[in-house]
Amino acid sequence: AWVMYKKRKSRGRLEAINNISLITSREDNYTQKTEFLIISPKVEHVVLRLLNAKEEELAVLFDEEIIGGESKVAFEAGSYEAGIYYLSLTSTSANILRKIRVS
Image (cartoon, rainbow, N blue to C red; front, side, top):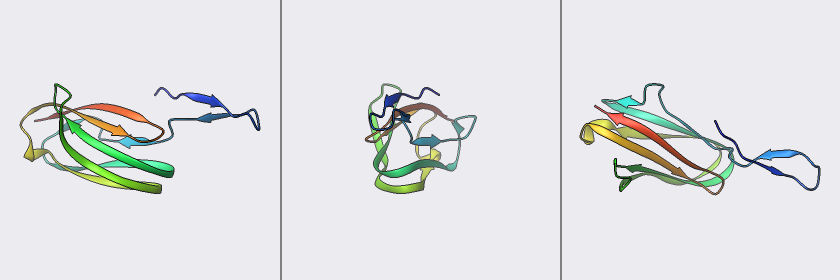
C-alpha cells in the first residue's frame, strides 16, 4: 500500500498522512450480507460511499465520526444487481477507492 509521508518540523521524524484503513475480504466478491471494517487511530470524520461502474454514487454506507478505533459497516450485497462497484472512503487524512464485485 502506498503511504504518503510528511516531515514533522519539531522532531524531524516522519509521520504517516494516510493512517486510516478500510478492511474488506480478500476476494472482494460478495453475494450476501457482509461487513466492512474501518480503522482509524485518531478522531476523524469518515464517509464511505458505494459507487457504480461509472463511479456514480449509489448510496452512502457510512457517514460518522470515528473516535480512535474501529467501526463496522453492514453491506447487503443482495440489494444490488450483479456487477462491478467501488467503495469510496473519504476522510480528512485519506481517500481510498476499492473495487468490489457483487454476484
